[in-house]
Image 1: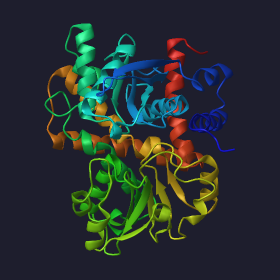
Image 2 (image 1 turned 45 degrees about the vertical axis):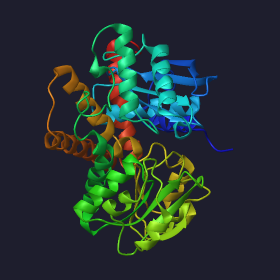
Image 3 (image 1 turned 60 degrees about the vertical axis):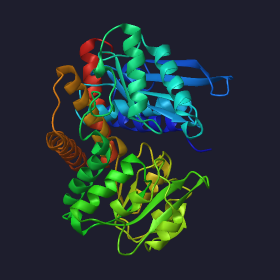
Length: 426
């Protein structure tokens, strides 16, 4: 039986806890969330009926600072996934050296089948349930899968109404002009590319010479493809989920995938118009064909467990590196097999930490009530991402461990030191 996302997160932690020889009290504290909330959200639907949605908020650890993590709207959301994502957020913030802890939230719902008014009801109901446990100095939410800036504004408005004060730094991912940061939309995807560039440098290779296939065409994948195009890398295939068909397709073209072109025929949920794609010369292949392409780099940038022991043998022999744009896209069993094949795997909580880094920048700007220009934000983002990546690559070389283990060693050590100084562990 395959591992659940949270079991994956715990197994990854356990492995590095052994490498660091952590005492039992540190293991007991960091293997599980410090607190979590389960609640019901009653919403009056457009037809007048009442519907009850289930919501969650999990704070894994806040030893280094307030919790930080997104809110997902997904019909298959589970508390197990939320726990795993909160855990990974702790390590992501720590490896990026941000003064934040790890948290995550979610609601079991499908916003694609809900009106804007119904979605607003879920947002306001969600924050009512956790209003005393989140905030600028406690736990800072943000967008995630199928949530956006409008959802964050509704949540912020309800939070401020409850507390009777303006507090834009309580939540990030807001639109520019409502406390949002310029550069935030593209930050995660851009961060993936900055990390890829530094990883290639360790192998004596240049980004502009690389060929790439990307899974997904949501926010992270779109801006990953955009920057890859700008910096000269060749994207040969992109896998996109089709809401109407309920499955994914891979769009491939030997001359390369162009962001502006594919974006122009994609709806707000990342579904590509197949007819228009064919007219532009794209070949429409099965959803998992992205990993079979003759490229050097794979970037899974959709949902978790995309690469498993069951399908990793499909990965082309030309692939030398996987850069995880999504959270938990490679199962431990698959990773072991791929490393044995000689592949380099750049872990998710390093590669996709650009989003939380820019979220931190947004929080800082909100607290100062002074906002930076896009160029300054992206300059700070690149500097932060390069610094984090170089530290991980050096640790991997010095300790002769995988990049994931090296990133975990840095992150866990930082969190343990903070918890120890607070007196939570010996």
